[in-house]
Every structure is written in structure tokens, then in C-alpha cells.
Amino acid sequence: MLDFIIIDSTLWLKLIIISLASLITFYFLKIWNSYQFFKKRGIKTPVYRFFWGNNLELTSNSNYSDVILNWTKTYGKTYGYYEGHQPIIVTSDLEIIQEVFLKQSSNFSGRKKQILNRNDDAPDHMLFSASRSRWKTMRNIMNPTFSSAKLKELAPLLIKCTDRMNEIMIKKTETSISISEYFKRFTMDSIWNCAFGIDTDIQKNVKNEYFDRCEAMFTFLAKPKLLDFLLSYLHEFQPFVLEFLTLMQKVMSNLIDFSRINPSVWFVNHVFEIVETRKKQTFRKKDYLQLLLDAESDSQDKIVDDYIGNSFEKKANSSLKIKRTLMLFMFAGYETTSTTLTYASFILANYQEEQQKMYELIKFEFNSEEDINPESVQKIEYLDWFIKEVLRIYPIVNAAVGRRCTKSTLVKGIDIPEDTVIMVDVMSLHFDPELWGPVDPNEFYPPRHEVKRNPLAFMAFGNGPRNCIGMKFAMLELKIALCKLLLNVEFFPSSNTPKNLELTEIFVRRPKSAFEILIKRRINP
Image 1 (cartoon, one colour):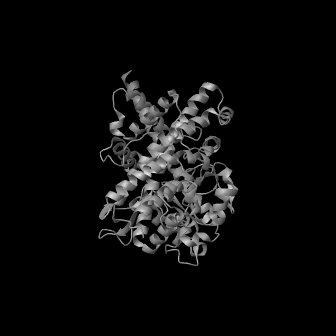
Image 2 (cartoon, rainbow, N blue to C red):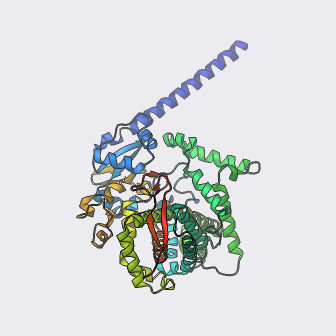
Image 3 (cartoon, one colour):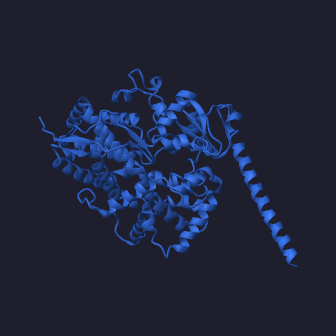
């Protein structure tokens, strides 16, 4: 009997070893097959390593865009690389970009899947990560809330926040300040006021819970994590890991305060509380949350009804979409806008003739600050050119400008299977002399935007049906802020202002180190 047990145990051990060996062999064969992707299509690639792909080159450099730009110079306008064993196509070919972003946009309705993202059908996607019919439904609901007419309702809140920044800047005149810190506080103040209807006093109160917690959240999200690193190579196992982590969080939520581990937990919980509290209130606020609630209750509801079956599920999913949309407002609108203002101040300080021209045009248009409003700022065409030129030279979210194939297709003779990601090399587009000449694209020259050019050459806000939905709000915020600032203060380089900016890239492409700008009170002639 004992011999039988020993033999049986030995047999089981052998079976386990054989099974594991078979699984590992199968997985390695799958990886090997993935590495045939570009060879089969005759597409050039940088040298890659088995299992690692090109991740080591990307992660060892803090500037994603520079790596992509250098590869483009070496391998041409269209090439590929591997994240682990996942093939990524990179292009700056306008014909391919037109197919992906415009002509065949319905076949490319997804974005690159992020680490621990749920599948396309999951109801808890934000607009940015949603795809297929779920993205279309969400976009149709949200589009009216970002119309020019609706944004007018947010203007008083935006102007209030800009006036606060102006007051602070005026008090800081004749001193050099770390300009990015002030723009961060202004942008976050604007988001809490305009999106959530909460006046947080972030700009004046240095020790502010809302600012500190949100900054901690963005710092946490930017830190490299071992699990993310591993899953970038083993992306097939992400669904299992995600389900396990979700289950563990539910089980452990009564024992562990997850907000101490992950600062974003506080933000998510707080957003949910804000939405549920607002739904119980009888008075109507003029903020973005109210616009979303109105869209939920009026004729837009039919879109949701058509998409979601029963009314209970409809209400639950609709409420979840509102909460996720508000979260996206913070994630997409905070660092992008504050970093753009930081770049703009750097340009204004170093190009005094541009600053003077901007001031004269603003002064000519407005007799006083009270004349600044959403309609009036649109009249200054040069202001629009200036902001676009800042974003051409310093594009913010290059790593997000891409599409994932949701239906297998052919693009310029290339077979594109479902789930293949095509990324745009934004830097190559933005500095292409054929697209942006005759003035050297390396020079800051706003009038180049007066000339009619291929709209796909400018990718600061993406392009096509999936372009940045908050573009109008961002441009309005930037225009109002610059108009009010330039009427009151002047920007000059200080002894701590660099001649050229060294950049880093995590979520956004931003200055690697904070720098100072000298602020002076404008003396009106």
C-alpha cells in the first residue's frame, strides 16, 4: 500500500513537471511567434531582445519621444518595435495616419491598453480608455457638454480662478518664482471649481488637503511599479491578475485603509461622494457636474437607454459614467494645462518681442479685464497661433497619440490584425520642414499657423473622432489666463532660467526640473 502511494505521488509529480514544462514551452513558442509579426510584413525594427523586446531602451531613457524620434531617423517614417513581445507600429506617414485616424477610424476605435485595464466591454472605463460601441455611446453623451454654449456656463468659475492667480502673481512682482508651482495650483483650482463645483482655496492656502492629496496621487501614479513592469512582459495574464486584485481589495477593504497605500483611492471615493451628494440636492449649480447630470436626465438619456437594457442597470452605469468622466477631467486636464502654461511663460520670458506683441494685441482688444470673456478671447487670432506654436514645439501627451485596431483591416497594404497598436511619432510630424516650412520648424514662429496646412500635421490634441474632447475647454482656459496675466505682469528670464529646457516624459512631456521666472508689474503706457 505504501509503495502504491509513493508511486502515485511520483507519478503526480512527473505529471505536474511535464504540464509546467509544456505550458512554459507553449508560452515561449507564442512569444517567438509574436516576434515574427514585423518580419512577415517587411517592416523594419530596432534590434530587440527575446522576451524583453525594446522595453530596456524605452525604460532606460526618461524621454519616450526622443527614443521614438531617433528610431524614426534610423528606420524611416513607418517601423515597429516590441513592448515585451507586443508589437507596436510607429508612423509619421500622413497617408497611414489619415487611414487610421479618419478614413478607417471605425476600425481603430480603441486606444493602447494600459496596465491592468479591463476588457473593452467593462462598464467602468473612462472615455479615454473605452472603445468600440461603449466609447461611441459615452462620446455622444459627453459631446454636447463641451459645446461652446455649455462652456460659457463655466466661464465665471474659470475667470474667478484666473483672477486669484493674477492677485498672487502681482504680489510676487520683482521676484523670481518657480512658475510651474503657481500654474499647478491655478489649474487644479480651476478643475475643482469648474468640474466639481467645489471652491478649495488651493491657490491661496499653501497647506491644502485637496492639492496635497491630488499631488500625492499623481506622484504615486508616475512611480514605476514592479507589478506594472512584470505585466508589461506578461500581458496575457493581466485579466487574471486584475480579477485577483479586485477580489482581494473587496475582501481586505474592512481591514486595510487602501488610501494609505494608494493615494488615488481617496480621490475616487471623494468623487463618488460628491456625485451622490449633488444628486440629492434640489438647487442647480453652474459647473460641469451639473452639465453631466442634465445630459443624463434630458434627451441624451435615450442614447443610454438604447445601449443598456433594463432601467436599473441603466441608472447604475449612467451614474458610474458621470463619476468616471469627472475623474478623467482631473487626470487629463491637470498636468497638461499647467505644463502648457509653464512652457508659455518660458517662451514669453525668452522671446520679449513675442510678449510685447501679445500684450499690444490684448490691450487693443480689451479696455479692461472685465471685457475678457469666452467670446472676446476668440477674436485675437494671434493668441490662438501662439498657443498652437507652444504646443507644436512642446507637445504634451505624445505617448497617448495612437489607436488600437478593433477590426482587422489593411492600411496602405499592411495587414493590421485586431488589437494591433499604431502610434504616431508626434515629434517627427511637428518638426518636419516639409509640413511646417519655409520658416525653420526649430524656430518659435506663431504666424506659421496662419497658413493652411494638413490638419494631421498638428497632433497636440490628437485628431479624428477620438481627438481630445476637452480641447475647447483647455484652449479657453489658456486664453483667459494668458490675457489676464499679460495685462498685469511681465515675464523675464532670471539667473535661474535655463536657455534650453531639459525634458522628461511620464504621463506628460514636461521640464525635468522646476525653473524660475522673474515677474514684474506691468506699467501701462
